[in-house]
Length: 287
Image (cartoon, rainbow, N blue to C red; front, side, top):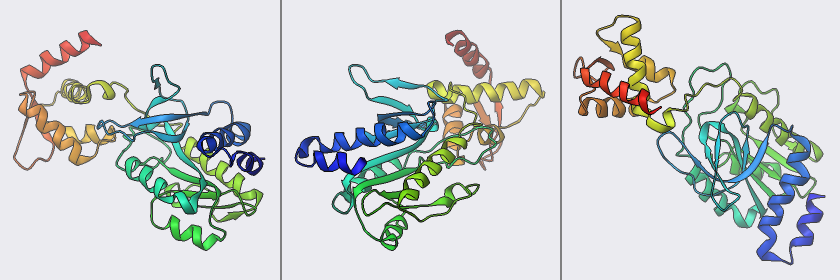
């Protein structure tokens, strides 16, 4: 069905991309994945404010909100709520550079997960799907090994699929897969990606005022445990914030006279100032 739809649209080249994408969603993904999955396109952002630019298909496991773009069907997604991104191409052999371009925009985005039971990848998984493409598994594996994508599906030639199952070690499935199994294997991969997000924790306030949310948690720790010196890195680690980013955040707070480092080694031990207490009161009034 997918190949028939693609072939019938080849004569209308300007519409082929949109038609291929819609067919892949409506004739395949929506028919196999359960209703809680949502499929769309748009832009993805992370806590650092990085943006992916427009991506083809976002597979959203909607535990977190996403924002509707005015006067458009596109959405703005939070990186932590995206199970995977899929790039659909008419012919991967001719359009691989477009996949590389999407990967280049998507890879810098990072996901900040707090407490979690699963092991979701910290990057957003990217899958390339071609109605046409390479005809042999070793060729697909060669392109997969470059790290541009996490999986490749070619629908033609009976179906070929390879993916990097190492990004989710719990998966009881290894690639490659061929024929009808190749389509089912992609569904398994997407399903596992979504399962890994089910138990994640994310404080949505971080997307509004990340510095102040972390400051609030530092102040709370100081009050609850009667601490003069607070190990701030323990707090940022729990929020999934990388150390370099945490250092920048704490340095910014020190520049605003909200916290002070106990020593110059930047080991994350801080004291809070009276200004911090006032800032937290103001934040609670706003929220």
